Amino acid sequence: MEEKRAERREEKGKGDERMEEKRAESCAFSVAELPSVTNTSSLRPADCSTSRGVQRCTCDAGYVIHSGGLCQDIDECGLYQGQAGSQICVHECVNTPGSYHCVCPRGYLLDAQPNSCKDVDECVANQSACPGGEQCVNLYGGVTCVRPECPKPKMNVTYVKISTHQCERTPCPLGSSSCLDAPHSISFHYIPLQSQLPVPRVLFTMTAPRSVGDSQRFTLRGKGHRGLEVRQAGRHRGELLLTKSLSGPAELQVDVEMAEMSPQGLLGKHIFTVTLYVSQYAF
Ligand SMILES: [Ca+2]
Image 1 (cartoon, rainbow, N blue to C red):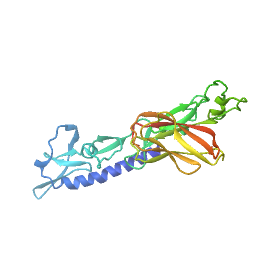
Image 2 (cartoon, rainbow, N blue to C red; image 1 turned 90 degrees about the vertical axis):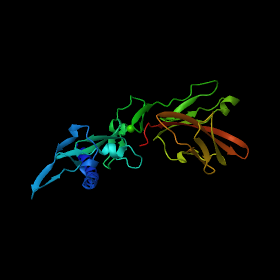
Image 3 (cartoon, rainbow, N blue to C red; image 1 turned 180 degrees about the vertical axis):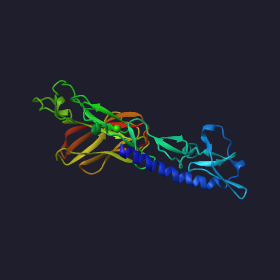
Image 4 (tube, rainbow, N blue to C red; image 1 turned 30 degrees about the horizontal axis):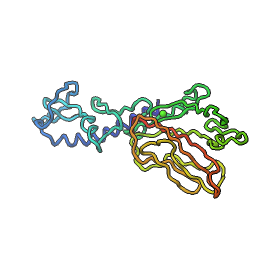
């Protein structure tokens, strides 16, 4: 609570600086130049005094002088928030009498640094965010629960779970080529992303779980997705690359195949199932 107050103070402090700026500017205006006032609740009496027959009026920070000994609230949100490059809040700006404050969407907290919204890590904040047996994945502005499942047994191919995020093929019956062709392992990876990330960007690095073969060859399985590519980053290393900015909210899933090669040919295949969760927001 104390932290929240501190944030708020800092936010107001920033607002005050801007308001001082605006106030200094406003001193140069003549009353006729001021915008007409439509909202009377934005008006309050000025602090006026008369000296040698000349009346001088001043306004508190966050107000500009208006005719009739009144001060008019400055709408900082209206002035700054609408234009790219001058935004004072990363998300929403709320004007208040004499000030303003920033509001974050659900799933975010206003950061101590003014104008930014910080994602709440629900997996840390609430250890029981997901029901038993499900894995918690923190997302930007949200959270999701996953339960990675191994493929169901098919023909002579059976997988068993060797960790929460990995399945391994059980030994193949003698002479079963369909089993030998099936991937040795399938692992599951969950990546939260912000909307409109700058590209190119490495999303995920893949290496051989153990050093088998001379080299590993990485390819996207299936149709893939526009904006996602796989690149060889060394003999034993591959990278999943984002080449086009994604807009959320969106959920994409791609399978990357890693083939272990030897001079004699293919030794085995491994599948990385990667799920991307693109947030609605760019923060
Ligand atoms: Ca979150």
